[in-house]
Image (cartoon, helix red, strand yellow):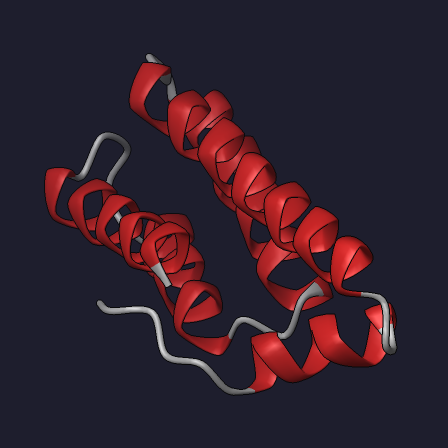
Length: 100
C-alpha cells in the first residue's frame, strides 16, 4: 500500500503551523514510531506481542490520521501473527512515506 499525501500531511501541517522545522520533526517522529512498531511486529513470537504491536501501530496511525496505515494495522490485528503480506505492506508504506 503506497503512501498517499492527504489527511496525514494535513494533520502534520496543522500541528506545525508555519514552522517547517517542526513539520520535519513531526514527520520524523511518525516515521520512527511506525518503524519501531514494524520492528516489534517482525520480532513477535507470540500472539500477545503481535497484538500489542499491532494495536500500538493502530494508535500511531489514528493519532496522525494516516488512514492507509490504519487499515494495515487493522489487518494485522485481525490476521495471523507474522503475516508476511501485512508486514511487507507496512514496510512499503513506511518506505514510501520516508521517500516523500
